[in-house]
Image 1 (cartoon, helix red, strand yellow):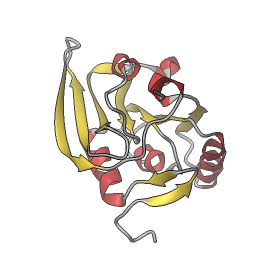
Image 2 (cartoon, rainbow, N blue to C red):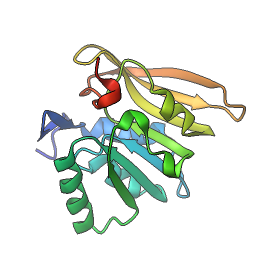
Image 3 (tube, one colour):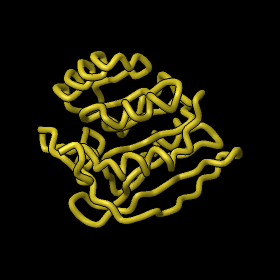
Image 4 (cartoon, helix red, strand yellow):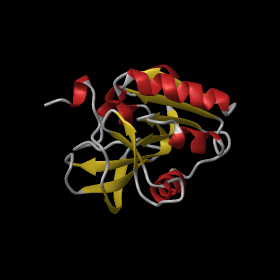
Length: 170
């Protein structure tokens, strides 16, 4: 299954993204070795593991407690010590370590959460799928310039599980 280029279920109604999308989203972040990156949607820990190999520190937020426990155990076995995971509502980000050199969201929302935009450093990027759950979504790159102005660019159509949490429920 690891060689299929498609999403795989990881339980709890969640999936791990296909390898192409993991690589594309990582590349779109324009990571550098000294970056501190926030990931929203830890899931299995796969995307965090990939990021940990190209940046200095990864902070990851996951809303499903059992996925947090499993990802922490998996990443510890792999001795990836530059990843911290928190159980929480990803919509809110992780203010304690902000601002971030990059933010990656691995679940779709109808718009980019304002708390995440505030936690992004000037000159940094946020990469996330935007669109209605279980409908057409666009992979979007948001760039915040040094003056704090934001611009967005759509990259391609995608299909991600929805961002869930208290702040994303209708």
